[in-house]
Image (cartoon, one colour):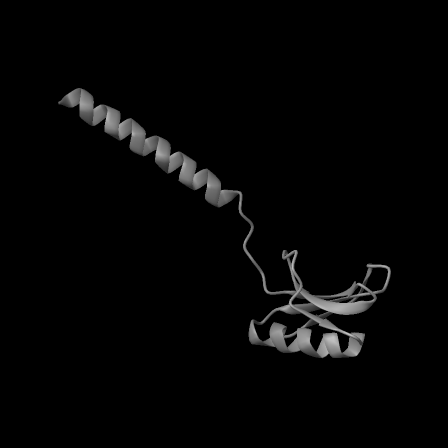
Length: 93
């Protein structure tokens, strides 16, 4: 029976190491909202997401939407230019 307990103890230790290493590699998710050019229009995209949150014809409309979302989650709005470079960062807390 002692052999069975040591095997179980080793297995639990391995599981613990795997779990802790997977947690340390993940970056905390943020709610920062990016206003980016998208298919000739403007889009709001949450930081780290590939999908867009919303699409707008005007950048100013996208900024309003991004500010609303960012304020709700105490995050920032990052506004990009048409070439994709960052124009401005606004803290909405």
